[in-house]
Length: 185
Image (tube, rainbow, N blue to C red; front, side, top):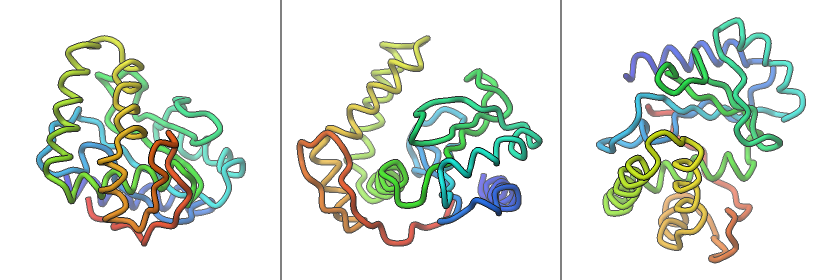
């Protein structure tokens, strides 16, 4: 997988070069060693301007990325080669570097990489949700979202790895600067 991630990163760096700021990062469950994950590689790419990044839709389309609105106003989301989960290989989020989503995705990934117990808890939740909602990706994602935004333990873990200063109970990730995230697969 490391080789395909390297090639994917190089392709996206070339395609997104006019808008890219903050790099391209492997996030999601496939970025966490040892955790069960659907075979979709999630990527977040930091862009200088959210609205300006709309110009990237055409070049991404030429590389078989399909617009897949997921969190409008926060990120431009793309799937490759299809939005249909059984066919999807990549999920790409274009969001402004330093945005709440940017910090959330990187801090969440780094917290799970650094805390085996938290990773096991998240994996158990994913299994439970996949059995409760086998054909409802939206409900499955919503259940995971509650864990990401509502877990004081997760916030504490994120604070440990990222210089976060969490405001527990706010229901949102607080604004804080992350150290430069790793580009490791």
